[in-house]
Image (cartoon, rainbow, N blue to C red; front, side, top):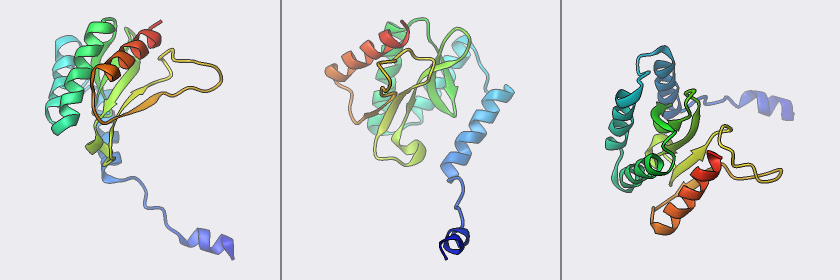
Amino acid sequence: MPAKNAASKKSKGFTEEEKAAMKEYLQERQGAHAKVGADAESAVLDKITKMQGSDRTMARRLHAIVKANAPDLVPRTWYGMPAYADKDGRVVCYFQDARKFKTRYATLGFSDKAKLDDGPMWPVVFALTELNAAEEAKIVALLKKAMS
């Protein structure tokens, strides 16, 4: 009986937001949005401008923090989100606004390229509901560790 119940439940598949993010990623990979230098930064700033409320404010501040404290990282978009990559184009960190996937908070995430290792388990995604001096200091420390 359990097998029948499991088989009868249909997967809803990807959400519209997830499908849109995948399409953006494919466009980025195919070169439609593969920009470098000032063009890449303009694409990131455009994404930030389209955000709403406190997410836009946090994304702008985060952009400034990354540029000031991790100058080797270059802005680019990743799945349509503002991201910051190493010299080889590999994303090290990214900002996901709450509206992107209809979540209750924005997130700052780090990829496996970030050197945040701390024993056998460590956090790589952080919820952000506001960005004040204390959080900014934590982000600066994470960026420095990620780039070490």
